[in-house]
Length: 253
Image (cartoon, rainbow, N blue to C red):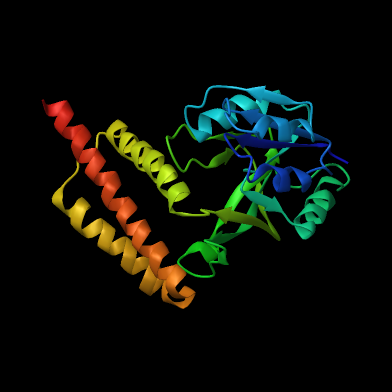
């Protein structure tokens, strides 16, 4: 059986971390990488592991790429503090790692069930959310992107069927704290690509995002939660391009 390191990146996650780590105690190693938390995150982490690293946070991909080579085992499972490994997923992962001769794939995508303000979102495009989180650390690395980086696997990939639970956004305060970071990173990523903000980016892209999520991906079936989610997603697109426009103006001057 292949041994597993569960990697958990954290920063000020005292409200989430206990439940997350409690669901990972079956892994042979839990590796927590902390971005110098200022709350009780570290004291919670110490109850579950003696492998706690601290590293300055640049972005999610860079943090994980720095951590992955320091795992003691070849197979790693990446879990954010606001995610929960279900019993079914735990058993499915263990079955894969017990396959004689090793798992047939080098990386596995996991279906993610996301909760938004306490409600499971079944539409809005989130019903198709799969994330590559279980992989051989010698075969996988995150893309060098500011935001929404995926793992690139040098080899074969497969899919697991059991869900990973994701409890996103407890309130607007938490949402807009992350909103600021992600729209900043999104604008910087576009700037690195040499993009310039045009009128249609500010007007049409947000409108299309709303229509796609709310109408074509049936976000209206998620009720008021779906409406709020789709409107916030559209506003996020607008803000990203508005920030790109600001960066373009600074470059020009």
